[in-house]
Image 1 (cartoon, helix red, strand yellow):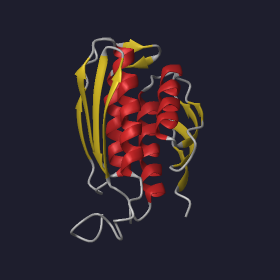
Image 2 (cartoon, rainbow, N blue to C red):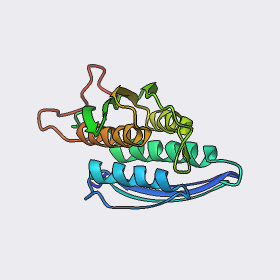
Image 3 (cartoon, one colour):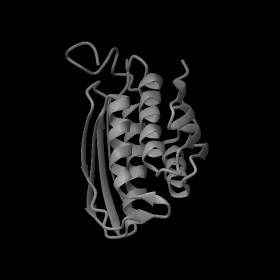
Image 4 (cartoon, one colour):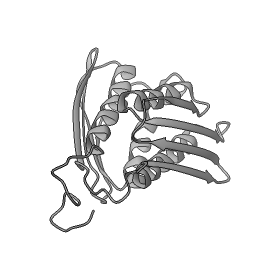
Length: 195
């Protein structure tokens, strides 16, 4: 069964079209109008082996907030939809990932309960045209849209580009792990019987 999702979300602030295939080859076509953000989402797709097509028209004349937050909301909802009933999947994923001077930890649980723990220390206002304070907003929106517990922690590092890129790649690898099937799991991995 295909684990895909297509979502279109239109508000007065953003117009977003997104398609996601959890069992892809890591191909991406991303256009948000924010170059560094595009680069991060392309890395997410490549390192998680997800196929991602994303087009965003946002009110960038205001700032990047609506574009980045709304993209997180839509990506989270797409993850939740593509995962489906969660029968047979591992549910949990984690990765410690190095990126030059930076070392990032990501752990997540596709449990149906949204929660974000975020500990990245970004001391620059921007990387390219991306405001670094928006990284937390993006991952918060993803965690709530996907209804997942998501922990991101910086273990080492001082270069903001490396820290952010490491976080996106660690997230991709952890999500890839969490969405994998395990033949030992015949229903959902929960004593409650549902996630």
